[in-house]
Image 1 (cartoon, rainbow, N blue to C red):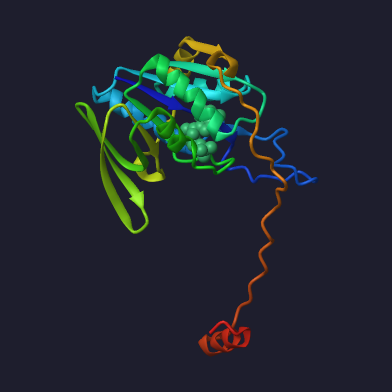
Image 2: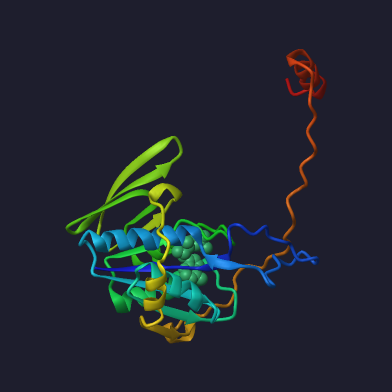
Length: 248
Ligand code: AMP
């Protein structure tokens, strides 16, 4: 079985985003970019499935600018076997990403497509679900545990108030949640080896996908600045303050 792992290049999760002065978006000039954290979890899970003898090949895919090659090299250094960069400098919405992934899946015929549950830049949480719908395949989203057995995959899903277990017939779509695993760091020898692994470059047009935007971002703004707190002497003073605020 092949596993297809889409990995997105996003603003590093440690960076505090700065909103552009004109409110048109987040300023990405000279900002550290990394693999979307949920996608690292997806790469790790795919590697573990391969190590357990449940998969033969892991293909990492990224849709984005030429620099997304770095993200793919990271996936290759972690343990993916080969990579496909679908190069575009334009912003690509989840629907277009899902259409491109559908076309790649039609060529590669993976048993599993393992995506992150959401990209931390747009927070859409849409691509996996759209891909499952476009491909007419079952989906196990927000995976906390993934077990492949024969022609099915059992996914424990993180839902409000607990875990839900679903059994899907392969081929299937899985999206990863935070507690699925702890991704490994790539070792230096593996980083060197990754430079020699195959990386193919394509364009959205190669897959017949029109990436024109369907959404317009009208404004992006900083969250309101938190007000400073106040220390009170004792519980009575605290209760009096809360009463004065009219919230108790
Ligand atoms: P989203 O629906 O944008 O929150 O993204 C969910 C998941 O879809 C991500 O965690 C990635 O696995 C995948 N994905 C979204 N956009 C891209 C992209 N441009 N390239 C590769 N994978 C992507």
